[in-house]
Image (tube, rainbow, N blue to C red; front, side):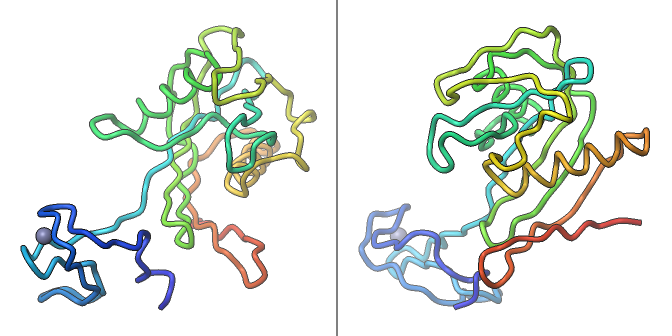
Length: 200
Ligand SMILES: [Zn+2]
């Protein structure tokens, strides 16, 4: 199966009625295989998850968190995490920054929207202004740091998305203007990734 049609979970029981008769098939009026309950007909759609985070700035410094959880424990990331039901993407980014870095921020705009089709994820990274320099590790962080662009630990970043976001930010700084970036993080054969930007 291709990456786009695999089942994220090996579903044995219908989430709707509890029946054990879930089968993988293309529902009527659809065009891709789904887990369909043969008892009640419930279709278990699987859709990408949104990860919201902040490029949180205090003067010329960037807020980074050293992860205290897997995956990539001990490596550095921007404060970011999965959106919760019922919240906006911007609110999720603010909440994650508070949870992971005990830092209060004000979102000043979208910075990067990156799709990761191989991981069924979408990253929404917001530009944010820290309301003060105070920050401290939350339970999901080993430590937090406010770093200058020169201090970014490039060889200790947790995710390609974070590296691309920081690279875009440094390029924007060089050009003297912060832009909104949209792109796709594509997985190459062998596991490396590349960024394909949607640029005008
Ligand atoms: Zn069912």
